[in-house]
Length: 122
Image (cartoon, rainbow, N blue to C red; front, side, top):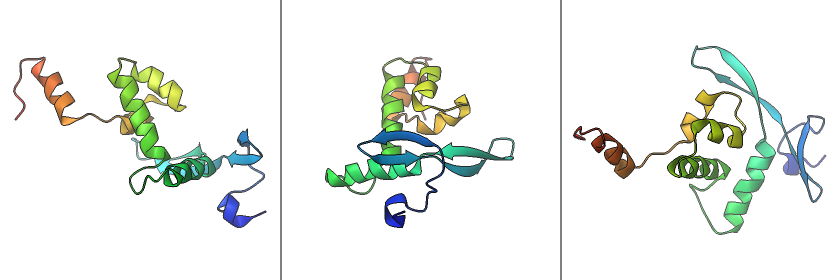
């Protein structure tokens, strides 16, 4: 196994996507949920690295990554009127509370939402 290519991921883990002979595999990660409990989840780090590499190859530097692309995608869906549940499904999250970090609201959008209720934005 070429360690540089796989960046330490285990080749025997479940394959989630194959494209032109390249493997994007799942790796197990851990995080703390809202209840303070440690939970494990699966992540596609090799796919994220690949997509981030595409941003770099396109000349987009720091601040552009697979993660920023997901945030933009989620924000645009919500701005177009799609439900949070739809965003959850399209991002592949098991729980809806995992979607909120992807949602971006501009100051203008927040001001307009507050103004709709007749409340000042101070």
